[in-house]
Image 1 (tube, one colour):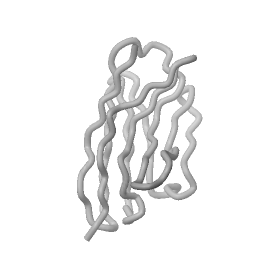
Image 2: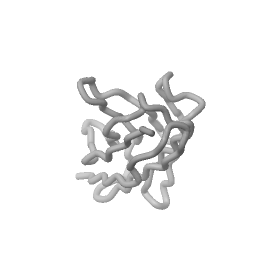
Image 3: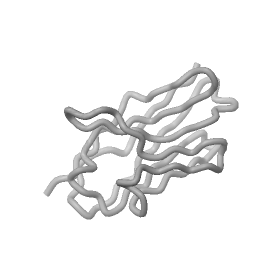
Image 4: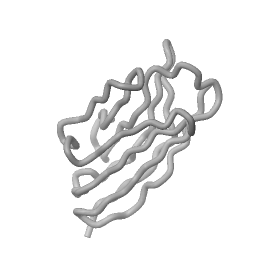
Length: 115
């Protein structure tokens, strides 16, 4: 079993920055992918950024050039650095992990971008 715990959400003004962290614990050996999804009110959960096999990084078009995902295997943590935040980035952000054949989710952290 794998447990994922997010931190770092909050309220920020448009144009500001936040850094999310996700700490993994449990049987994390050989987790194939780790990253972030988000879900805004009334919308489906969507991919934000994903690191696969340690080197393949995928971003949603809407965050390219503004968000950076990174993974620290020694600390068993994945980060999401979010810059130039926009009101449309407001959502609950979920940490995600995949190790065949199981998918794992954190409890979510709220990010609100508002003046």
